[in-house]
Structures are given as structure tokens and as C-alpha cells.
Length: 434
Image (cartoon, rainbow, N blue to C red; front, top):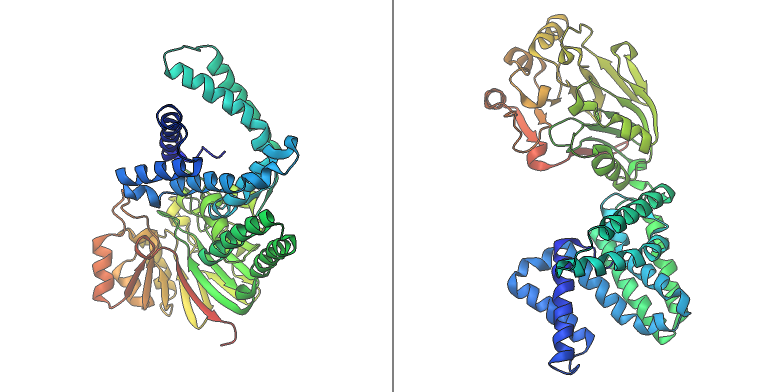
């Protein structure tokens, strides 16, 4: 909806209503609607120029200006179809925003918005009267429930096409093409308009081709906050260790899947759960339901495991009574480095591993238990001699991770420290065959 852009949208609508009233009552329609929209924007920016950085401000005024500048274009259409064309224009305006949030392309949005619009106007009208002390105690809850029911019904019918988020450069090109398409439509230069439409679509479809994954190998420690998720990609072979998990939002839909689409990765060959803690595998059900996952592994008995040219070895064959003692400790020789992914394995497991495998070493270590002092003992670090330690941890987490004691231990051994709470997603990449 054109007015549903957060709290700033409410300020914009009521300020514009006041200006329109003053324009008619005091200035005898001296100012045009474009001038009134501009005045309202300048007034809001005068109160706080930071409004100009808010998505609600940009989209709200963007929607108003699009409808204003396309008024002549819409009025040429059949009267019955004008609301649909207006909704379609707003939909085109919102496409990059929708994709940037990882929600995909909602194909039926223009139709749904036209159907819902009368109910929203009714709700706004009676809500405004209630604000003026005219009570509609029974009617407003009925309208609210009716609108909620309609929206819930539409959600079930909605057809969402998954697309990767657009880069800022492509968003700029898209809006530039959108602007010129409106201009060419208005002046009747239809051939150039169609060329812009199909040219922009063609460029985007070309950008969807997974060229980079085909030519590269990478290991990414995805920033999932206080949790773990590691993506290993070798050409078109992909393995993910853990998914992370958060009780307050869907980690799969909001973080993992958008990231994978951005990387032009459309399938996971193997999803491996290091162990059962929620911050490691809590997003598994949603991820498997909404993404193409070929195999799932959560048992030490599945190792050694070979996926394409990737060979994983699990060193924790001991287990224990605690969940963390069941954590897989996986090694991988890949991209010219020796990797060790330790999950949440505690010191007791580390001691058993180095006692049985004193030859074990690695170049890059995924630090155990988010840098907690329950893992990463001095003896373990001295045995495996990593050059880099990766800490997958949430910013300002309540657990105090990573432990200052562990950080000091790493520094004393000359081990470089990299943290997802400071760098975001950490990726090592190289061209295949190089």
C-alpha cells in the first residue's frame, strides 16, 4: 500500500492532509499537489534531516511522485483498470526492496492490493472518525478481523518466485530504466520503452547465471549472530555445516537463503549438523523446507564423508553425556589449507583427540564453542598449531563470548583472530585450479 511505510508514513499522510486543507481553505488552491508533496517533505526534513535516510521516507515520497507523474498515463487507461495500473506501478517501485529483504517476487501483489484497498479506506475512514471522539466500538474490530482474514487468505494463494537480492548498481540501473520507461510511455515512444523493459530483464537474467560458483572454491563463516553456519563450496558442490538458529526470527528465511541466492547457490548437497544445540541447527527445518537440500547428516557414523572432491574426517568418535561432547570435529584439506571445524567440542574431547592423534594440525581453526573457555585449551592449540582462529559469535552476547582468557591464549601463540561479530561473514575464496 502506498501509505504503509512505517511511522514516518503516518506523519507524511497527516501532514499532507493538513497542507491540502490549508491550501483549499486559506490559499484558494494556489499550490499544486506536487508543491504540497514537496512542502511536506521539506517540513519533515526540517524537523529531522535523518528522515531522508529512512526507507519509509524514500518509498513513501517515491510512491507519491510515481503516481503523480504517471497520472496522465493512468488516465488514458480504461477506468475500470486504473486501480490495477496504479498498483502495478507501485509494485514495480517496490521490487528491489522486496528482493533486498529476501522475500522474493510476489506475483499476485498488484491484484491483492486492489482487492484490499476498499477495506483499508473504510478502516482508515472510521478509524479517523473514532480519533475525533466518534466511537465505532463494534465496527472497527469487525473491519480489522475482516481485513486480517482476507490477508491471511491471500497469503495462502500468493505465488512467490525466489530471486537473489539485487546489487546497489543494478538497483540504480533498474530505477533509471523505470524512470525513462515512464517518460517514453508518456510521450508515446513505445519501442524504446519495450527495449528498456526487455533489456533490463535480460541483464538481470544474465546476472543470475552462477558464473562465480562455477569458477571458484570458497569457505564462508556466515554471520548468524550467536551461532554457527559454515558454507563450503567447490564449483557446483556445496556443503553446509550447521544453520544457526534464533528464537526471535527465522534464520533460514532471513539470513541463510538470501545469502545463498546472493552467491548464486541454488542447492546444498549435504547439510551437516555438528550437534543438536539450537544455535547450531535450530534453523534446519525451515531451511530444508524452503531450500533445495539433497542430504542431511547428524551422526558421527556417516564419516568419513566424500562429497565431490571434498573429503571430511570426524575426529570425535568418543561422545559423552553432554550435548557438546557429541559435537563433530571435522577436518578438511581444501584450497591449499587444512581446516578444522570443532563445533562446541569441550576440552575433555579435545584432550582425547590430541592423545589419539598427536600428528593432527590445521591452518585455519573454527574456534570451539564461540570462543568460550570451555574449549580451545592451551595443549590443544599447541598441538594443532593453527595460523588463524575464526570466532563465530554474536555481537554483545550475554555469554561473554569470546572469553578474554581464550583470546589472550591465542595472542600468546601468535594465532590471528577473526570474528564474525566484527567482520560479518568471513569468506576465503580462490579460483579453481589456481
